[in-house]
Length: 546
Image: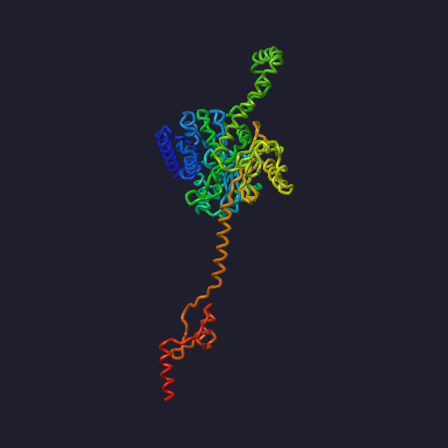
């Protein structure tokens, strides 16, 4: 069975590569590291569909890859962008100058998260496996050695608990599909399994498993994180551009990724994909360095003393050169400072170009604030909301434009975004030109070159018409329910006398027909006489007079 699955995935990725090789020259190819095998094709296609709709001048194509084939495609300049797990992104960044422009966001219920981890589990009916220590001497199944959450993070978490891979009876790798890992544990083919967070919930949503079938080992709870978890959290998949990719195209793609809605599932895409500003991947690098993963195979292997002993002549020459250069360094300090300032200005200009591209592409209001809460950038949508021109807004904080009680709420939210380094979404009402408007607000952190939070961005979308429509629909529903409560119907078989036409009720009492109908419906009677009865009655009256 394992051999058949391996051949299947090999043919699948070979077909993906063949299709990519025949793509049009105008295609923009996005290489995606597949987690669930063929199941990922439809999931990731929504990204290409969104970009094709938003940037019609280009045609975006999704090309699924394994870990090995993605590296080969990048080295052969066969792709313009890649979507890779954190460890492979760090490797591509070091080896091929890839650079992240967005980080994946998962939306579950009312919660957004751009982080993930691993979940280690056993079958719930296995009473002999209740904790992580219980898997010593037992088998563990995971996706592959290159899968970041499935194996790299799992191995690190086991080490923290004092469990080495050698302490397990066996470690099996099921290939690129995380689904097969879950099914192997469910079917009793392995004692425990490890997959990235979210896979169990996704399979349960698809009706393939029930979460109650499994026991989560080393379970952890992180506030705001919606998935089952057994490890620390790491930043999600990175959307990265490659060194040969056109910068103008990169800016457009980065801007549109941030605008893709990801909290409105559809029939076609029940699990929408969203993106946020790039997260800091330093924690991933540190984990890779601990395990000496590529490109850090030699990290920390040679001590300073050993390096000096092995390179005595080189060290001596280096020290001599260093002393000789001290004077030159002192004299050139002023020049270096100027170059540093120029570099900072150049990087700032690149960031500003990206922001301007994003602002030009959206009708929403966009604000950027520094760490003190002062506005450093606003677009035309933002000036309409505040009701002041941009020159009167820049450099001031929110207390200059809102009442103290409103400003305090907004400042508290800003501080939480910066302290937690998280993105939040909420609805609020605001006065715009003396009119109350409903806004959908997204706030997220912004980082400096060292990965530190140095401000926030705010995007506000006017949803007044949508909210008004919702209120109208709700009002009509209430009216309809009220009307239905007043409706009475006569149903079933009604027992009626064949002679006098009286009707028997459920208490065995006989009543006139109009009495019965008036008590079982909203109908009321007015009495008269029909032409036929009138004629009969007149005949009887005339007969009596004779």
